[in-house]
Image (cartoon, rainbow, N blue to C red):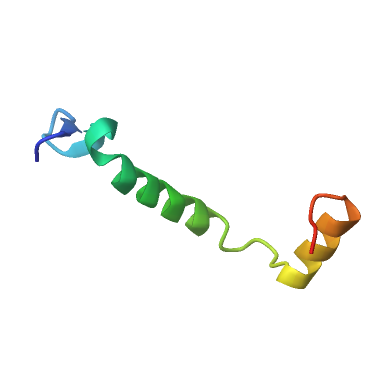
Length: 63
């Protein structure tokens, strides 16, 4: 693939990838966002109501 390069170990196994961000920025951002979401899968959930209440209290949100 043009703009994608793989790093291989001595056995020829792909171990890393180099991505041309000028060409594939959107794809990288989507991939990165999915990694962040997956890393937070076990975090405590907060309702939208609670978030709005907290932001209102801090003066960072206007209804």
